[in-house]
Length: 166
Ligand SMILES: O=C([O-])CC(=O)C(=O)O
Image 1: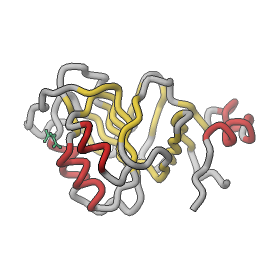
Image 2: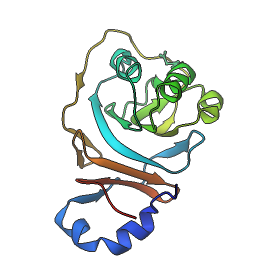
Image 3: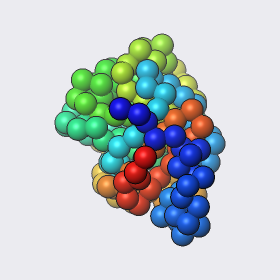
Image 4: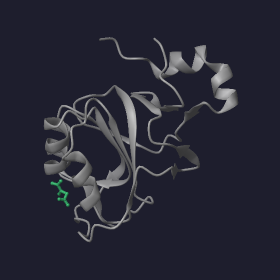
């Protein structure tokens, strides 16, 4: 299946860009994982330096969805590592976008999912289970709601209110 190219989508959907129904995440993310291009309906999660709820969601069937985690941009620990990357792959998630850090980069890069994160950090997160699932989140000024669509490739990451056609 051909992936939707984000640059082409921006060229052909200027009205949606203008109305805000199509948004571009600021270019602050590093590219990890086997899939350089991925897309799917969004599942949202808001946490801070605690990844228990990330594991809970990744333990459910992904069905081609993308988990978007607002980790508050923390640079003090990693929210996703090799185990969660493997879990996401096994459960059929298309990808994970983390406004925060990941670790076990070599393992994550071997997983058949797409991953975006701000950076890598060797320290694990806390395990208290605090956070909010399926709530609207704001990543670097971009509002993201559960059920919206995410399109990522080498050029960037798009958030769309509805599914885009190729
Ligand atoms: O368990 C964690 O905190 C994250 C991690 O290292 C992994 O997913 O392997």
